[in-house]
Length: 245
Ligand code: 9WO
Image (cartoon, rainbow, N blue to C red; front, side, top):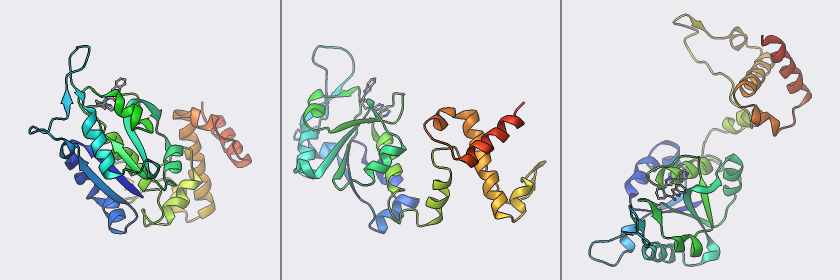
């Protein structure tokens, strides 16, 4: 997977991508990342990327020319790129879209805005899709771009290194996770559930499935409405309801 990022704060990306899973995915050649400073595509002495808005008002707007020059320099063939802008006005980025994007053969180009806005002509002529990670306003598109890159990268074959991760995930996919414990067995008056110490793998699987269902029913029932429950899940759900006063 090839990612290209256009930003006035490249160090934000260097910091995150030089650690842990991202660092290893780059080393293994699973991902390739170009981090581009938008100011490198300006032509004036002050490397200006913003200007005041036509029509007046407070705040600054990002100028179109540096974005156009950047994209034309990084990937001039528009059929070879998928240009994404991060904005609360975009389509919501969710796990299903991460899975679709993990199959992408084009380069993923992320435009990160700052100040109050980006000139509309960047969206009209260059951007293929606007994506939102949630309903809040940030100071820039850098964190959303990293969130999306992170979510896609961990789905790429070999990125997690641990084959087991995918197996566990499919077990409860679309549900909240079950509770996890590690040593010590007794800690400040709280103990690890007996079943997890029993060594009975079948009982452990059933307990985990049930606790995942319990949490999901309690906190995110909307996730279950989109799914069809297996007969086993329906039975566990019934047990949970009978236990709940
Ligand atoms: C801000 C905004 C506020 C209300 C309605 C639409 C909006 N669009 C933007 C916007 O694109 N802002 C630019 C990027 C420039 C200012 C900082 N930016 C930004 C992106 N703030 N918050 C986001 C963002 C992106 C994706 N998901 C959540 C928030």
